[in-house]
Image 1: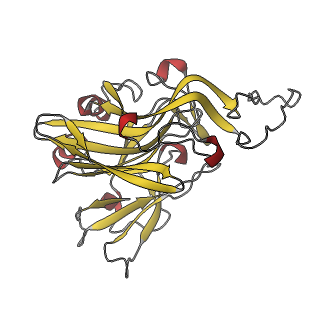
Image 2: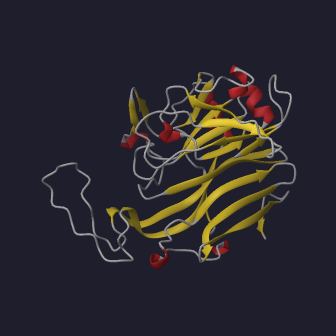
Amino acid sequence: LEYLPRQGAQTSDKLHFAWGQHFEDQRSPSHGWCELELSEPRPAGPWQLGQLTNYISGDYLFEIPRQWAAQYTPGLRLVSGRFRDGTWSGLGPALVAIGPWTEGDPPAAGTELKNIRTLLLYGEPQPNVPEILAREEAQMTGFRAADDWTGGAWLTKESRSAVVIAGTKATGKCWYGFSNGVVYPTSGDPNEPVPEVPPWPHDGRGWWSEGIEAQMLFFDPTDLAKVAQGACKTWEPQPYATLNIDRYMFDPGYDYPRQKRYLLGAVAFDRARGILYMVERRADEEKSLIHVFAIKSDNSVSNN
C-alpha cells in the first residue's frame, strides 16, 4: 500500500495497492488504486506492468520524491518491487518506477502499462518466461538465495536521501531443503534421490541458512538516476551500506517450533515528520510489532 496526493488529471488523492503470490507462472494484472474513503473505495484496475514478470513487482510499494521524479522519471512517482527467495526474481531486490495515472484516469482494467522504468534489477527479463535470467556477474553484493527483502522506502532528510530495502539477511551456510540442514535436490533430474521429510519442526521445505539477521540495505539515488538515464545497467548499483538492526528486534533469530523464519515485513515512511515504520513479523507469539524510527537532523537514527 502507498498513499499519494492526486497526480496528473486525478481529482482526488489515492491509496495505491499491489499484490502477488509465491508462484507466478504467468504474467497477470497486479496493481491498482482506490479512494481514501474506504466505505466507498471505488477501486480501479488491476493493471499489468508492461511485459515484466510479476516476480519483480507487487511486494513493496513506495513514493519517489517529487523533485527526483521530475528530473529522472517524469510522471512516475511510485516504486513497485519484489525479491523472491531463490533466483527467480534475480540476484537481489528489484525496483520499477510506475505512474498508472499517465495512461488514464483510471486506465482500463487489464491495461498493460507502458510508461514504466526499471531502476534496479539483478538479472535480465526473458520473453514469455516468468523467471529472471540470473548471472553471477549481475548479482547484488552479498546476495544469498535464502535472503528475504520485504519492505522499501525512499528516505529524505534535509539535503540527504537514500533508498532503503529492509528484510531478513541469511548468514552462514545456505541451502535449499529443510531447516535441520537436509538438502533437497534442485537439479530437476527425476532420477536424483529425494530425502525423506524430517519430523516437525523441521518439515518446512524452502531456502534456509545457518542464521538470520534483520538488516537494511542503503542505495544511493544518484546510482538509480544513472540507470533511469540509461547510463548504466540495472544491476550495477550496489548498496553503499548495510545496517544490522537485530539489537532493536523483540525476538531476533529463528524459532523453529513456531515456524518463524523471517524477521521483517513491510516498511512505511512519513516524509513530513521523518518517521520510518517497520514491521517485525511474529515477534510476540503470532503477533507482529511495529518499530518506529526517527531520522534526526544529525543523520543519526533513533528507535522507539
